[in-house]
Image (spheres, helix red, strand yellow):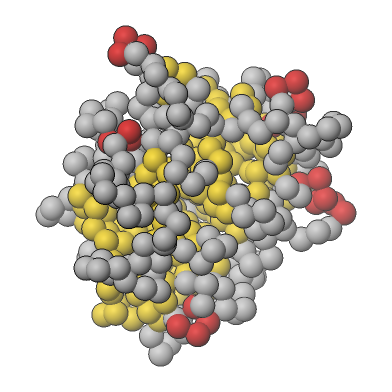
Amino acid sequence: MLSGPTPTPIAPAPTSGPAPPIPQISTTPAFPRLGDGAFGRRPVLFTYLPDGSDRVVVVEQDGLAHIFRNDPNITETAVYLDLSDRVSRGGNEEGFLGLAFHPEYASNGQFFVYYSAARPRRSVVSRFTVSADPNRADIESEMVLLEIPEPHSNHNGGSMVFGPDGYLYIGIGDGGSSGDPSQNGQDPTTLLGTIIRIDVDRTSGTLEYGIPPDNPFAGSPDGERPEIWAYGLRNPWRFSFDRETGSLWVGDVGQNAWEEINLIERGGNYGWNILEGTHCFLPASGCDSSGTILPVAEYGHNLGCSITGGHVYRGPDMPALADLQGVYIYGDFCSGRIWGLRVGKYSTDDLTPGDQIIGRADGQISSFGEDSSGNVYVVMFGGQIHRIVLAE
């Protein structure tokens, strides 16, 4: 068991009665017969196709998406999409950062990507369709839906996930540099520092997508962007929906001292750059945090330096995994530590080191992913994809 301090839980209030302890986990290579370098140096995403084919995709930051059958005995992959000639890697955090399959992919063949582009520097959200070959996208089918000017080369966000409501949610960083110099996080007239929510099946005016009518700033006369679902975020690198409850969990990367997990609410302001975690970011500048929503959990930079949001485990309901059900699993890119939070069943008094620090990955955790059955995978720089299992 790993020892040391645990992240501080903030909300929600615990339910009555003690929660069962969260079991320790380990990771095992998911596709051991694939050779070294099968996913390049920097895989950043693992996801599955929602078409019943039991295929999965791994995205490389450098511009490739690999497709293959979800089988531990697989020996080769195919290139599903090659964006290497369109993706900018001028900054360490730039690249091919997100991919989401349309919920009706089986019938419409559509999927969406998020990548960095140059001259001018921007983040691009595009739609593609699959070709006649089910293992190959049609590279000529790109339809650019949205371009977001990026003043700096870091804090690019890039997470994109369809919600249970059928809308596409996209995480966008605060524009980069250090300390949010343009105050983008607290400015809802910009898309920087936000999670947006768009309707990819409709258009609105001159936009290539629709604005859901219940978005918090839809129809606002004051200049707020109607795409925004939540704001006050620094770099929402990875987020996911709980398959059972529909809750949206976000790992927001901190700056000097604190990493945080947020449960996202409609119209929520998550405090950056007034707050870093629950702490005043620039005390000399004041710290009026009224109207902000505090994180569910935070941890200090003694435990890591860059949070990677994960998934609420809703995988196979086997006795050996029963105590992982409903546990939000997340980690840290720098330290490889993996934590678990039991959804809605924790408070400060409940926690011990074993309750939260539940394992450690042997590498830099860039992402977590799920397959169609709800198994959770760990994506690591160096090309490793591991599956989470219970520790022996």
